[in-house]
Image (cartoon, rainbow, N blue to C red; front, side, top):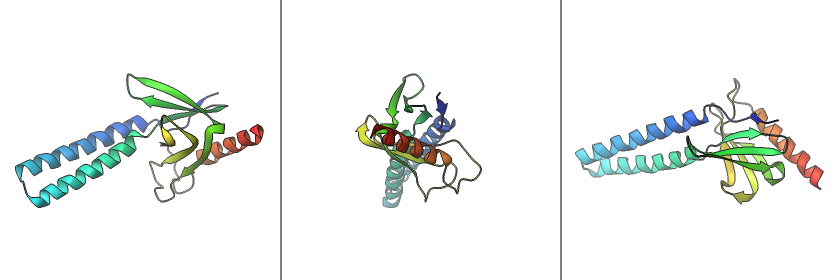
Length: 153
């Protein structure tokens, strides 16, 4: 049986953050063109670098479902969506950034072998009231991975 473990607001976060960053970059670009100074050029350059860095990180968030044998990752956007299955045996570990606790939280799945996503997959788990504690989905996936590795060996 499959169940969704990523937040239903993942697409919302992607859309809102990308629109906000794009708007910020465009505003800075227009201000820079209207007022060409070295200070404004520096501010525009920094905002563009920051925007591309955050945009790249946000685009890497995935929608994830957990099943009996592994995890299903959705890639693509509105019209072109594909699903990729990764068994628990292909997962090295699951962790949560201790310094970025809060809502939204971020969970990282580290893979043994790189695939379409690379060697790490990040997602936003479902929202909860106490974000300062480790998200229970981290322990759930790590337990499934350990059981699967024990079963294979």
